Image (cartoon, rainbow, N blue to C red; front, side, top):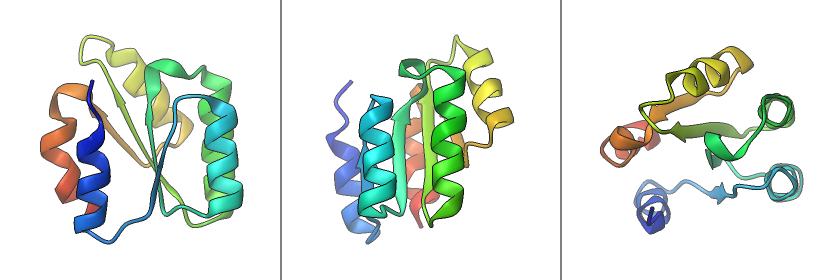
Length: 102
């Protein structure tokens, strides 16, 4: 999936963001860069990793936006229970992004 539209949408809405799929990259971006938004594909993370990024973002000012395949509803439920700020199926992610950022 081409994710270049995320950067474009964030620029339009003056939002700094981090996009990463590995937990190490997410941890680094949250703790060192202080990004206001962390965007991740929830299918690439395990439950304990999702909890870890929620824990890290709570200490700062980052919000987490996670997307997942619409056929994997359990991933969305798991992320919601873990405390991810914004969760959306991948199919609606592009169309909802601008409203989430504004």
